[in-house]
Image (cartoon, rainbow over all chains, first blue to last red; front, side):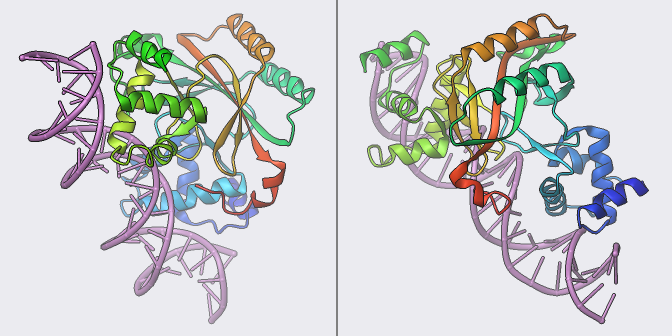
Length: 146
Length: 146
DNA sequence: GTGATTGCAAATTTTTTGCAAGATA
DNA sequence: TATCTTGCAAAAAATTTGCAATCAC
């Protein structure tokens, strides 16, 4: 709790109740869209709005407290774990699960470092393993959830 | 041209002018958002609308003529090249460039096949190399383009 | 001719903005 | 207190829908 305040302060941001609550929610959810965050906070903070959520998430991304994640359903997702790791992306419901495999990332990064990417300045690597949970298999090829 | 018609027919779809034009545009652009496609077609087909573009792109994805690509700017992107390849994702303007390296993909897939992904049913692997073009470097940390 | 497809207009969903009121350091 | 931040309301951006007119087969 104090730790979260400190993190936020270290970014040069004020540790408001909303920011603390949003960061806690992200810690709980791991990966989330703005909607996920609102859903999780509405009960405790009925007055919170999307304006604030987006505002805060954006400020967290800018200071490195969160990273954006790619998605295929035209919604922005945020990840509280900013270190290198891959994701299992469930295309049935657009959720992520961490796939932590430092070995794999080390290999990929080592490989890329040996390559010539021209005038491309590599910032980070995102590895998305796209698929389904076996239990969800039956709904693929049908209409996928938004 | 006839080739495109055939491709579309093979999917069980009717080869309408719009579908042919949209597929041609995707071949020209490689990766594109719905907006990119409209921009490229408005002159030749002033009556074309987003409804049709989305409709057609979606039908192409469903039959495997295109694949969706992940992005970080909450827009849907489509790729005419459906085989395995990585992308250099320019975070300044959310554009993609192919990074064709069968070697790398082979390694990753081989590695993953040897791993246990639990009840996750792997469908495809997306490798995104996120960064900037050196010429764009100066606008990072400032406001990124939508 | 018939069923699939398009284009229009309107609706929905997701994200952003301006600004007055409120909270933090 | 000075500045940053929030929440409201409204706008913008992106995608989807219903349906009548049109087109491909």
